Length: 189
Image (cartoon, rainbow, N blue to C red; front, side, top):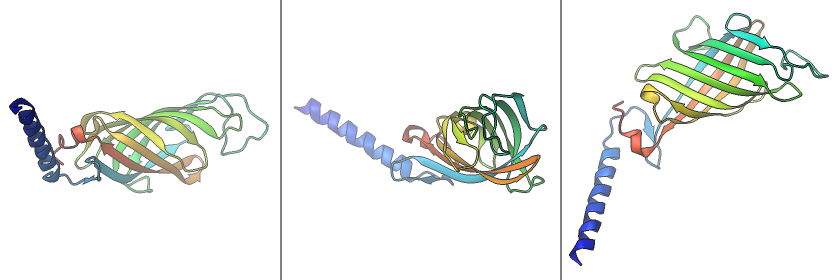
């Protein structure tokens, strides 16, 4: 009878320690109600056609081509600067490198894989995302991992087209990042 009670006592003690650890965190990021640390911020992706964005393979043009569509099967690569404001001369805090393949016959939907390397005030590392993007509509791209301070990160990035003055394009990127409880207290920020 004493053995099972001792196991319950150890379990209660460990549970109390975990509550103490999450409640005394000095992180500047917030914790949600599920013990996950979260971080939310916005950056601006500065893209220039044939300077930071290149068409590698031109796909098959469908019946309704327009400036907002790309031919089915088109392959694009990019290496764009990320800034703290929509102005391209504002402070650069990261780089977005990726590949996009037009995957719909109407030329509006793309399969996107992107690595975003960031050097923020308290966070340094990269975020990887993989998902489906729409050329005009706002959408969510799932975060599938990260490195450095973004190790084990989950969440999504919500890109939206801000300006399109050919050849310059500016996207607003809203980051919604979450760390699972088992790593939330690993970071001291």
